[in-house]
Image (tube, rainbow, N blue to C red; front, side, top):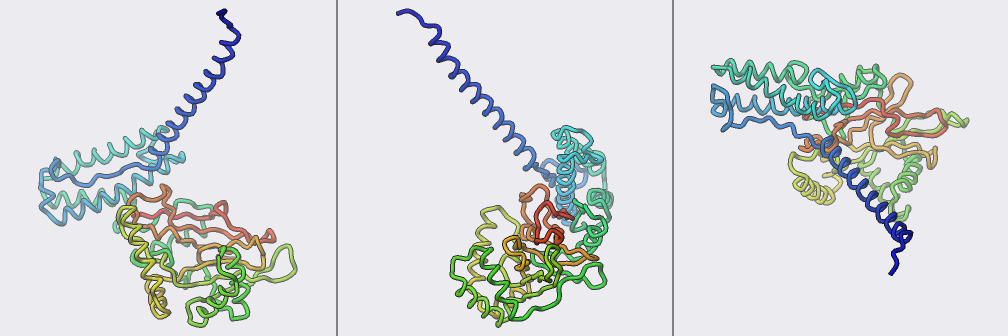
Length: 379
């Protein structure tokens, strides 16, 4: 049989092309996997290893020193993740000075290891160790103890971001939560306090029902919601604003209601936290009106904002409505539900955000592009 080189070439070309495409995709996917693994899951863990410690004093036999070591581990993890994340976006600090992110990881670990060998392990007394630990904790925290709850990570409007930053960091940690409402008395912020009456309820609920894709007919939804208003389980607040492209005045509205998502999740693995959430959902759904009110008093009220007059463009958004000078903002704390996540569910850790409302385009709009302030939570 005569060899047909044209047929052979014709068969080889598509095979080679397929092999080349497979190789390219394999390499690309591997690089992507490496980047994702490297970027999202850095492990900053420098808790004391009692069996391998080079300290001259037995730290593990002193409860106060053990407590300081755990506090240092938290401070180190917070500061390292912060510097690592900033370096990932090109904002290099005192430790992460290189452009290579792997170098940043090594430098952070070397910096902490150097402190352990040159400071901690040279101490001969408990007093020396105590001072060394406290000095290092203060250095990592960027301030004297105690550890501030937040760092200002995104500041597109310094005046408003700094003002809210002060309020957040003067709030005790035990009062932080996904639905916490702060005392804005004598601050530049003004929350909405005008309580709307029954004539506004249906307008909001019709819009809320449409936006949340409720399965039950609106008539059934309204009957249930009206009962909740009457029982004090649903509060509607509002403020009027002038629509830019229309002559009429519309309402910017905020509804508040008890919700199980106001509870922060406990520390633990994803599976453990998932089980806790399911259990809490069942417990909350079994509450009567008095029980829901007690829950709201303890954990706060969920807030949702909308502008029904803007029609389909009236985006429904979680958060508290605040006024700063002549501008309107939404304080979104939804991320604080996961404030104790061991995996830091997002590297950015912007668990509190302030988003600016744009009411000058003739329709109510709010999105991530409108992010004004982002606050990094120090676990």
